[in-house]
Length: 299
Ligand code: DGL
Image (cartoon, rainbow, N blue to C red):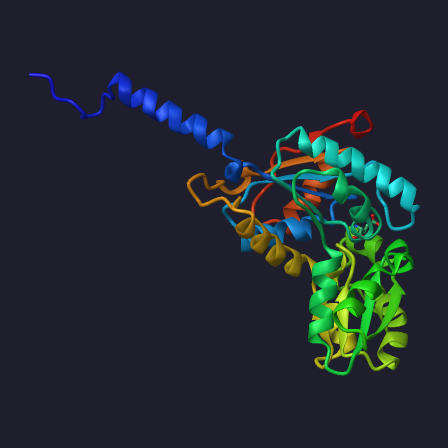
């Protein structure tokens, strides 16, 4: 007697499984999200996406060869960002998140009309929440020089809250301090006090941490600003916005193909892959074993 369905699938069963697999591979819902930054800092955004939308796979690119972006011109940042988006498209991403505040401030507006998939940055989500959070209408923004000069945070905050007063302060030393691992070091506290005291004096009640690295300094910032000032983390707000966007567009991963920790995510850099991996391992909730080096100027 032949017993069907006990361990040995019939031909039709194999074909059906293969068809389903092919379907899943082609279904845009199971495509990854492209996330990019000038280097390691954008991992704070990737981490928030992994926390808030664990079904989604990420293809991360860190432009470690050309970091920092924070002191570069708009033209250069647009050129770099365009190359990166071209690279991410080769990985069949279904949406792009510009994790870098500087690139969001200077390149998003130009790139958006060039793309047929959704692309979002971190500035608008952070600015919107700051505008909604303030009680006295005084908001501080700390970021790189280029982000502050672009005045995009001010523009978006005032679109949502026309009465708001925005006080921008570039804090260029924060990025190297974080990358050096001096998160709670007395030197960092001293530098932060110098940057933040003029902001405190304005009476702000809300402070936007407008650079990828700054949420890692949260406890120092909190100590200096005190409990009454609300700290806004654009990385957190961007992950929330991405979640809404994927649902709205009908392209959210429904969980049939859930990434297993690191296995679901891929990391690419333009230089210093080992250094990137070491930093990633201090930020992400799992070990990053492989980081692929690519030549970004080819895209
Ligand atoms: N990722 C950048 C940002 O958020 C900071 C580092 C840089 O200057 O490239 O603005």
